[in-house]
Image 1 (cartoon, rainbow, N blue to C red):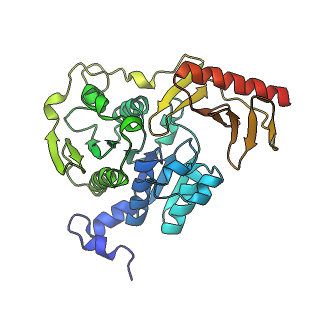
Image 2: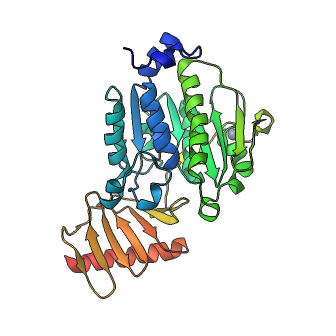
Image 3: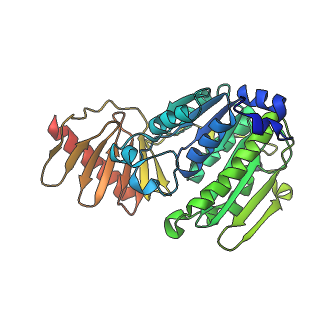
Length: 341
Ligand SMILES: [Zn+2]
């Protein structure tokens, strides 16, 4: 019995399309809500190779909408890529799954894109999307954007060799739509966005024509439709215009890269140079800080604020109101750690 029998009978795929899927490599940036759902659908569809990039951990509040993860993953503070890789191998052992426990940045993106046919956006911030967009247009790799907030969502494929706007051209039209910290997220919105993202990906990989139109919907309000975005291409765009400079690929001169993480109300900090921190194996504390080691990460708690810290110095800070406050807390957490050595 052929595992993909029903999919091969579908006129848009067929046996040839299925063969192309088996020979394809998809990079999924971020395996939170959107990325984990896309990964599972593509694994079930028989994609040859999946690479997952994510520097975050499973937490209990993810489970409402991130279908690959369980309570056990949250309890162990397991890295999302680790939990996702295990689950995807159980779903379909024929798929080669590689999990990269890191965030995407301008120094690792070129290497991660080697041999990749399509990039799927599973991120929650515009900075990373602009980076994906610049890389995709520079190296000619299609990518599929997905965004959501509450019951509202949108998706759009970007094909570098086709006419139409890129993500940077549309940035001002998309920015205000995404505030999932304020409006929350309905789990079904995730499924609707990923249905569009994965379908676009299957069409690109099987060689079908993909139109540059944006699918926009509000599940709660029973509203949906496609919007033609072709006229919004900007000739002066730094990514797809006449003079391309790909600004997000330029090397970052600041000491630290700092990003707000939408869905988790946190701040991600990455030092310019990778560190080699001494992380105690045992729990320890003083009057301000509590230190807890887990399987993939350690956590430092100070009152209701927390720092999830990697050995290389990356951290996710939660319970802070500003990036300045996050940096201050990060420095205090490192100072506490040095005292323990
Ligand atoms: Zn553009």
